[in-house]
Image 1: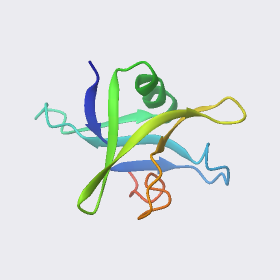
Image 2 (image 1 turned 135 degrees about the horizontal axis):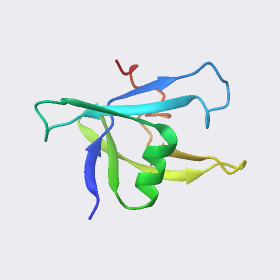
Image 3 (image 1 turned 45 degrees about the vertical axis):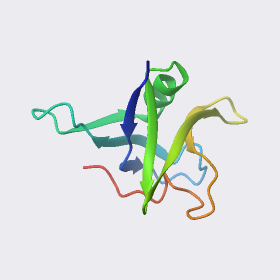
Length: 98
């Protein structure tokens, strides 16, 4: 069973390709007082999503948006949010991770 995990921050590089722009994702870790935050490279997070290890989501206003793994036309594994009409790119709009 996948762990339900919130993504609330990202790290980006300066590439213009949206499939390669996000290098890391991160979020709160409610199960650990010792390590209150987590952070993973994009590829590892996408692999965990694909393999059923993690079930990611982001919060946008008063609702949550599901995050799924996808494969770009160049074969890169990455995360993307479900299409929603409020925020066109939920992940890229998140703040930078510490």
